[in-house]
Structures are given as structure tokens and as C-alpha cells.
Image (tube, protein in one colour):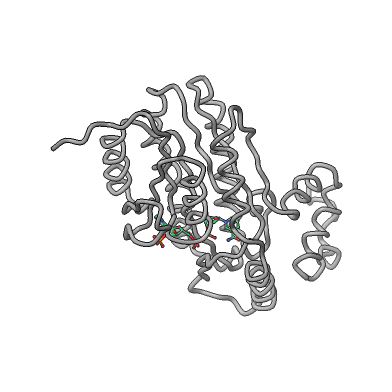
Length: 286
Ligand SMILES: NC(=O)c1ccc[n+]([C@@H]2O[C@H](COP(=O)([O-])OP(=O)(O)OC[C@H]3O[C@@H](n4cnc5c(N)ncnc54)[C@H](OP(=O)(O)O)[C@@H]3O)[C@@H](O)[C@H]2O)c1
């Protein structure tokens, strides 16, 4: 028998809800009254209070199948949380175009796919909230995290543009940019590693892994997302954690050289060596 759409409930979809931020966010949204669907590639995992669906954000077919089933069943979608993502550590020079493309496939194109699939329904409703999970790596280019940072900067630009485009239809777009939190986030390395970057790459990886292990509980991210989902006019950028707040401020007020030196100091990187290059400043040949 064909199920009739249920219209008297607010429906939320959280991608990547089998673990980490997505799991806790799905649980939180259910707790505050949403009918929540979570996703993972296999459709397994996630909180007990939430129905899980199979969705691979890298795959057009998988996205369109999952979203059309959800819409056929409920006839509406009030909140989309684009959370599925993964990280990568490695020098920019070490990372192949194929490896970078694979990361963008999930962190950027995955978000675009799912968003474009839900927009017709949100436009028809005249309402909706889209919450994209970025990172503090979308605020500054974190060294040895360059391709991940590029993906989160791309996500930030896309989200900001989208916010303007869909606001006339009653749809709001927000970006949540957490500092490192305690999750089991996958962090791959490029296949080809260059020994000259070992010290920098391994040092930054150890610092980031340490920050994740000692990081705050993902509940803070879930609470921020639940607030965005329930607020009448959510603002665009939401940093989560002291470091995120500090970064917004430092980026706005500090002179660029001072900002750069703070990033290097935080990641215990050696200072720049531009002065050794005598050619810099030489007059150009005529
Ligand atoms: N942890 C942090 O410190 C931190 C900080 C800032 C931002 N973030 C961002 O937060 C988001 C969530 O990360 P997390 O830390 O919670 O990591 P996590 O625990 O590893 O969760 C990642 C989720 O994404 C799903 N996923 C991965 N690839 C997918 C794909 N191709 N299609 C569909 N789902 C996919 C995973 O599900 P399956 O593997 O089961 O399919 C999993 O549910 C990411 O966007 C990450 O960049 C994390």
C-alpha cells in the first residue's frame, strides 16, 4: 500500500550520521522534536532513535535514489545537514590531482549533489534550512592540511553564494565551522610522500590528532546545529570552540604577517626562509 506523506512533522536529514558529529546531531535533532533520517554509505550505524538510509554522497545515482524515496514518503524536508566528510593530511606537493579530486568529491561535490536534490522540495514548501559542516580549515589554510583546507574553503564560498540565491524562497543556508573535536574522523595520507616534508607533515599530523583526541565532545556541534534548525533567521557563519572564535577575530583584526606567524607557531613550523634568496629584489632584466 502506498504510504501517504506525513505533513505535520518537521523532517530533518543528516548525512554521515553513522558516527561523530552526524550521529550526535541526528540524535539531538530527534530529541528536540524533528523526525530525523540519518545516512551512511551502507545505511548502517547511527543512533537508535533515528532511521538510517543508505547514501553515498560521491554517487549521483545514490543521492537521487535516497532523496526521492525520502520525499515520496514524507512530501517535505525541513532541514538538511550536509555533514558527511573526511580529512587528509599531507603536503600540497605530495597530493596528486586524483587524491585531491577524491576528497573534493565527498567534501564539496557531495554537498552540492545532496543540496541540489533537496532544493526543489524546499522551494515548493517556501521554507527550509541547509546547514553545511565546514571546519576551521575553511577559515585559514592549515599547512599540511592544504587539500582538506581547500575543500572547506570551497564549501564556504559555495555556501555563502547559495545563501543569497535561495533566501528569496524562504530557505536559509548556514555554515558551521568547528575546531578539532573528539570524533574518529578518517585522515588519509597521499600515496607518494616526499622525505623533505616528513618533519612538517608528521609534526602537524601529530598536533591535529592530539587536538582531536583531547578535543571537546561533538555535542557542542550538535547543539549549534539544533539551534540553527530551530531559529527563525539563522546567521551564516557559526564557529564552534574557542579556537574557531579566536580565528574569526584574528583573521579580521591582525596584520597578515602577524596572523601567519601565529599559525606557524601554533603548528610548530620553522620560520620562512625568503631572505636567503638573493634574487628576490634584483632588478628585472630589460
Ligand atoms: N572531527 C573534527 O575535529 C572535525 C572538525 C571540523 C570539521 N569536521 C567535519 O565534520 C564532518 C564530520 O566529521 P566527523 O569528525 O564526525 O567524522 P566521522 O566520525 O568519520 O564521520 C564521518 C561521516 O561521514 C560519512 N561519510 C564519509 N564518506 C562518505 C560518503 N562518500 N558518502 C556518505 N557518507 C560518507 C561516514 O559514514 P560511513 O563511513 O559509515 O559511510 C560518517 O558517518 C566532516 O565534514 C568533517 O570534515 C570535523
